[in-house]
Length: 241
Ligand SMILES: CC(C)(COP(=O)(O)OP(=O)(O)OC[C@H]1O[C@@H](n2cnc3c(N)ncnc32)[C@H](O)[C@@H]1O)[C@@H](O)C(=O)NCCC(=O)NCCS
Ligand SMILES: Nc1ncnc2c1ncn2[C@@H]1O[C@H](COP(=O)(O)OP(=O)(O)OP(=O)(O)O)[C@@H](O)[C@H]1O
Picture (tube, rainbow, N blue to C red):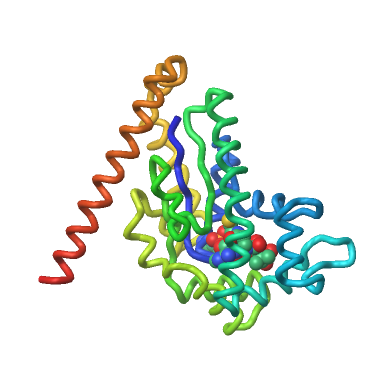
């Protein structure tokens, strides 16, 4: 099974791409959704968040006051790291099990939609990295419009992630969302066609013979590691020459 990692910057259009993939019946695992589930009242992450941030970050029904918690962590790196250290391990587990479930169902491929795919190192564990791109200025405009927020608030969210231009260095495939939604959809449709060609028929053998599947998975990871190292060496040479 091919696991595709989908990422982008804040408001580059990753969720819009996810929705298009889903509408074309591609199995999709959304880290933002999982990150909401693992902090529901009664979970260990919820308890730890209240212990660290205090009951002020809760609404009356006991669920997190997300805008309030967001305004704290997107303006304070130490607190953001703390929140990440509470939420991310639970999200990683939930994501791992969701991928296993896709494999058990005999899916040829699945897409994991993870905003912090590269920052958290998860990109090393997927077969292909797809980055949804638009310029930082378009990101800001779309974010301010979507969240009805100030430029300053939008900037602090933007600065909480690796700049989108740096994420491009990790991409096997870039989806450029600088244009219209119609243009985006055309790119997504041709991307889906390419994915289906790539997974071809070998997935069935890999699935029926798990040792072969494991070997082919390990080979993919090794190949990606070599590719990354070669890219890093090339970049280093360009910088020093
Ligand atoms: C801070 C929180 C409460 C704000 O909630 P809110 O509903 O306003 O935003 P939402 O969760 O929908 O996230 C929107 C986008 O913000 C960005 N984002 C969210 N958390 C982070 C983070 N810790 N660091 C950088 N960017 C982040 C992502 O691009 C995400 O797609 C929430 O984002 C959160 O719990 N974040 C920590 C968990 C996390 O890292 N989630 C991202 C996927 S694992
Ligand atoms: N091509 C486009 N033209 C105009 N608006 C767009 C386009 N693509 C997406 N948008 C809008 O931009 C906003 C951000 O898109 P989306 O929510 O898909 O981004 P995202 O990368 O998932 O953001 P986040 O990381 O914050 O969750 C949304 O309001 C969406 O409707």
